Structures are given as C-alpha cells and as structure tokens.
Length: 483
Ligand SMILES: Cc1cc2nc3c(=O)[nH]c(=O)nc-3n(C[C@H](O)[C@H](O)[C@H](O)COP(=O)(O)OP(=O)(O)OC[C@H]3O[C@@H](n4cnc5c(N)ncnc54)[C@H](O)[C@@H]3O)c2cc1C
Image (tube, rainbow, N blue to C red):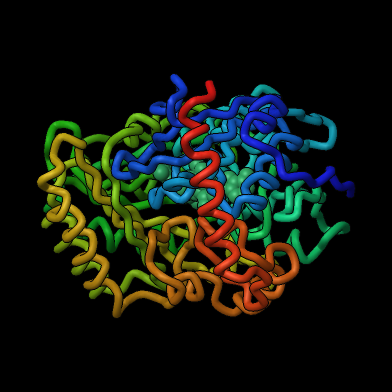
C-alpha cells in the first residue's frame, strides 16, 4: 500500500499531468466520449479524464474531491442506467486501460479495468482458457464483475466474482490498495457484488479454466407456443447439469414474427452436450434450430449484434424463485403485448456452482437457484414520441410479475429505483456493506452507482455545495477554453 501526494491540482495541471487525456466540453473528442451505450442517456460532464493508468485515476479522484465534483466512473459504459456518466461532474473513464497478462501455468489473468468482455475473452481464449463472463461482447468487464456477473458458465464455474482472486483499487482518499483473500479482506468481500461503492478498481485478477468449443445456440418457436415452451424450459432447467445453462427469451424474429427462444450453452464435452440438448432437439418443430459447436468468443461477438450502441433502452428486473404457471401466464401475456420488435423479456437460470456459494460469502446475496428475469424495452432513437409507450410496457410487465417475485434483485439490472431496491438487492448483506462504505468512502465520493449510503457522513453538505460552486465559477469557463 502506498499514498500519492495530495494536492489540489488546477485544471491545466491536471491536463498536463495525466498520462491519458483530459477532455473538456470544447475539445474535439467530447461529443463522442460523453456518450454511452444506452442512447437514452444524454449527460454533459464538465470533465472527462481518460485515464491511462492507476496514477491518472488517483489524480482524477483527488481533483474531484478537492472541488466536490460529482464523480462518475466508466468501465465499458454499458449500464442501462447510465451511471457511468453525469452532468457537470468529472467522468473517470477507464476504457483506455486494456492491459492483459495471462499466466497459462497458474491459469490466471491479471487485466486492467477498461476491457470489454469480448476483449477479455479473446485474450484468454488464445490460451484455451476462459472464466464466467456476461453474454454480450461489448459489455464492460469492470461493471459486470463488480455487480456479480451472470453468464453461460455460472453453473459450472460460478459467477464472475466467484473467479475473482484480487483487485487493485483506488480509494476515495487516493490510496491504492490490493484486496484479496489475504489483504483487505473486508474490501475484497465487498467488491464481489457491492459495485463501485468502495473505490475505483483499476485491475482484476481472475482464475481461468480450460474452455474449448462449446455446444451452444438457440432454438426458436412462434409466440403461439410460448406457454408450452416455458413449461418445457422449467422442466428442462430443473434437471440441468452444471455444464448446461439455458435462458428463455420472448422477443421478435428479424423477420418480424413474435417468438420465444431457448438459448443455451453446454461447456463440457461435445458428446455429453449432444446428450444434454437432445430433449430440446426433440421438443416439437421449431422455426429454427441454431445449436451447434462454436467458440465462446464467437458467441459473445454474435450477441453484440442484438444489442447495438445508440438505441434507447429501458430495463426493469425481478428474481423468481421458480416459474409457476401463474408466472408463465403473465410472461406470455406481456410477451404478446410487447410494443417494440426490438424489446425482449429474458429469463436467466442461475444454478449449479453459482448457487452453491453461501449468501454471506460474498456481497452478492442472491445465491438460491432462481430465474433472473429482465424486461428490456428497446427502440430506435428516431421514435422518441413512442418512449412512454415502450417504458409503459416494461413497467406494466414488471408490476404484473411483482407479486410472484422474490424480494432480491440483481444489482446490475437495477435502474434508478431508489434506496429500497438497493437494500433489497443486497438483502442480508446490506448492513455489512454499509460498514465497509463507512470505512473506505465515508463522504460518499463514489455515489453515482447503486449507492450504499454511508451512515457516518463526514462532509458538511454546505461546504460541499460551496466548493462545487467554486469549481463551476473558476473552472467551468476555463474548461471550455483549454484544449
Ligand atoms: C447488452 C447488455 C448485456 C448484458 N448482459 C449481462 C450478462 O450476461 N450478465 C450480467 O451479469 N450482466 C449483464 N449486463 C449488465 C451489466 O453487467 C451491467 O450493465 C454492467 O454495469 C456493465 O458494466 P460496464 O463496465 O460496461 O458499465 P458502466 O456503465 O461503465 O459502469 C456501471 C457501473 O459500474 C461502475 N464501475 C464501472 N467500472 C468500474 C470500476 N473499474 N471501478 C469501480 N466502479 C466501476 C460505474 O461507476 C457504474 O456505476 C448486460 C448489460 C447490457 C447492456
């Protein structure tokens, strides 16, 4: 552990000192850099620090603190809530930090926090290795990992956090710490599910596993068969081997047909995989069956096409302990009533190794076998007048499912839904997370996230307001001039 000198840097100093780039509103790259994956998010930060290394992160945090700026932290910029950018504050952007170091003997990867899942998997698969990640290549590794990380290998290898060995993290007071099972253990417990609440992670170390070709893809049926397909899915997943993770998805085919798909990945031997998918192959006549051996990397890259940057997205989620007939009826009703051909209801089966970790072992409390349901409305930005209709469909579906849902919700699928939902996400772990927040970020410097509010706030809110005012008066005009 070491400390960098603390001094209030002026804007030009910060610009000169960063190894990366400081982007101000008049700079050429500002427009492109302020945007994130979700086209609904339209914020105007005062400064964007495109960090090249941990030292840049420390300097940016210190600058933000001195002037009490809102501090947003950007990994892949893929959160639906857009919490990685902000109006008027400083965005600490890690997306240029893409270093990777693989140890093929130990089967570990030490990586910087700016990688996307696709970049991470490309690097590890070069050695025939991988670990659990999310399903879409463009998603940021950092935000996904800090929230938990559901993915195709969770039955076999657990969540992404279950494969995390250590993190390097910059705290609110500018310290650089390593947290692992043997160093800063409380912090290591907290970052495994507690999001970006305790500091900015600049590097992650993961355990990897041998992963060759997987048997994967989807089988698509017309929406008229949604009820029987969901019942089949319930039976099929209830006996699934750890190697088999299957999702159900109500959506619309590229040809415009409302449909339901079972999308799966088997990560054991291809022969055993064939046996595991044969009940699905025999289940009725699908519109299309795309299950075949493929590379894990290809799976992720293909999934990117279904989730392009720049569209408008709105999401709400639930956790279901089971798929009751009542739940299936509601899903079918809202699948049919979907207002946009780009929208979907996705059901992810959390099972196997992910559900064998105790709910108190990491900050991620939702360890029982379950179905994580996310209702994602998507529409083209040209359709702004339709926004209320698409959001209305999401909310109506969410409300219909609410009486059937468990109290917990996956934090990475939460929008701006208030403290009650954040508490619900952490459940029995919330109080312990508050204690860690009080220790590492007592002034809530890192508040633009699913926030675990500290209970021993050290900063006088009037002082905070005055300092922020000072920044706006002194530096905001300047930030428009310096380039
Ligand atoms: C198309 C799509 C597919 C998805 N699929 C999956 C999936 O299969 N499984 C799954 O589990 N989730 C999935 N998600 C959800 C995803 O895990 C979250 O949106 C996650 O926050 C994305 O991380 P990011 O780094 O891209 O996000 P960002 O928007 O950059 O950040 C999200 C949050 O994390 C914080 N943060 C980011 N990096 C750091 C850091 N280095 N240190 C501290 N805080 C940080 C940010 O401040 C912000 O609050 C998906 C999301 C999308 C949009």
